[in-house]
Length: 95
Image: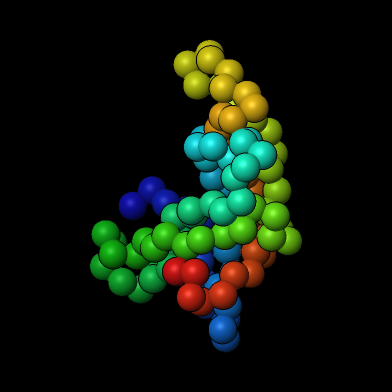
């Protein structure tokens, strides 16, 4: 219920907005696809509002802010990242 990122349908696409912390493996240069969890059903029951959607790492609006450490350890270059999703459009089939 603490998920804040939004996944809003608009025609044949979803628009994603939000911030994701500690995205595992996002800093790895081999990473091409991100799995994002967000709220897609704001009118559904509280525990049924969330969905996961596939997002290409290089999609317009995907901004990798910075690498993050975990308990003081740096997993660079393959570690976690803070990522901002700003009006990212993906096909509805990606849900």
